Image (cartoon, rainbow, N blue to C red; front, side, top):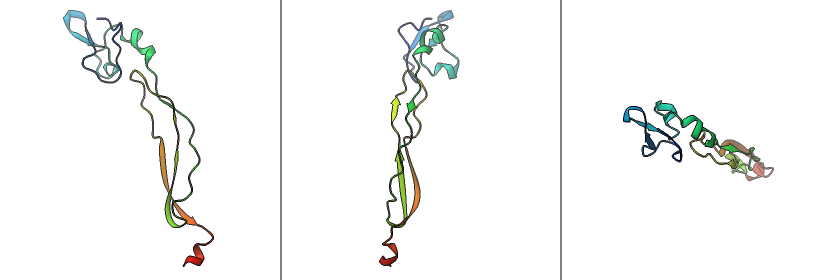
Length: 109
């Protein structure tokens, strides 16, 4: 079977061709895991796979609570999205705890 004009991202049961002995072979990127790729899958489809690329983390935000327990957040952007079954994007946002220590906190008590 030939994957020519049939390369599909992810798991796609509609992305197949007739292989040896009239058995189905697949041209989706999931076939690498299941071992039922068409003979030309690697040569025909592999070059089109692009994994996600993300930029650097931005700065942490200010603590959400000026006095006491709160949280901070930061984010990053996708610079190249995944294509044709490439690796998915990692987390784009992070959050962590913080303790607000604004100078006026002591007088508010």
